[in-house]
Image 1 (cartoon, rainbow, N blue to C red):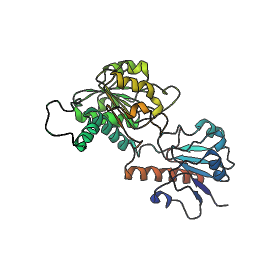
Image 2: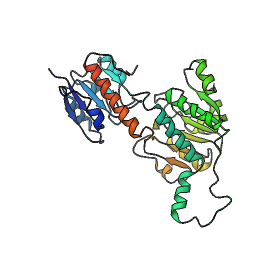
Image 3: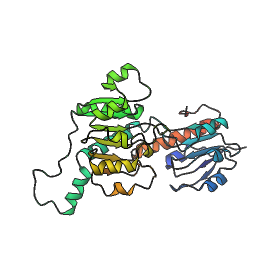
Image 4: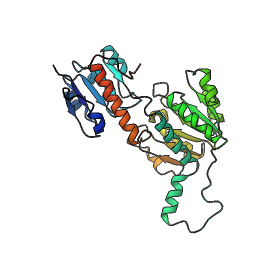
Length: 318
């Protein structure tokens, strides 16, 4: 009996061409997430599922008879009930590594844009309001020589820290698991508790997984610990930050600015953020370079095919 895969969201042609002709494919060639009922209907009888982070794969979805693999086209996997998949003997995979450097690049893009008020400057230049050079026009914050705090020191957090060396920055990090001391020496990074990081950092960049422990990790209590000149960057997961508290922090001056690529209720953004000039907003595009998105998709396809062919997946979720 031929293997069958349901591809629940649009993938690049390069990735789709990796699927052998003998494998049956049902393909939703759009970015629009399917309803739960439609997802269950189309998954019926399929051996594998390839999906984006926007597809919710809960225990009811995983109950599809014969399902062997769920390949997520993302490094995160909070859209999948991994515990339920394990109980059912279904292998879940993600796409780490291939997006690390690209995501770190974009975290720095947010950091620089927020620090130097690049979006405000662009709007000002386009508006026609700029009629003469001014001494005090759009003063921002220096980046070089400052302190960077990295919350979550996995692949992406370390890549962000590595870039700080070029700006001659002091690097603090907080994580529940400390890396090998050689990593700390290489990156000139110092492990501290979260409160110390928040109180001492000029820039706080979030790169932690979303879990019950990290949901609203950054809220009123923690935002009030930060310097009034500090800038918050979130290229991790939206619910790590309490957006209502962040609006108050940015409005009342608890912190200076923020750069956000992810949000609590994507694609909805807290309306209070939309009117603020001291926040840079991006529509979840940290990994959105052509090369990286193709690499993510091809890795997901290879993971799914490996499981269906009885081979170990390249990047299983542990």
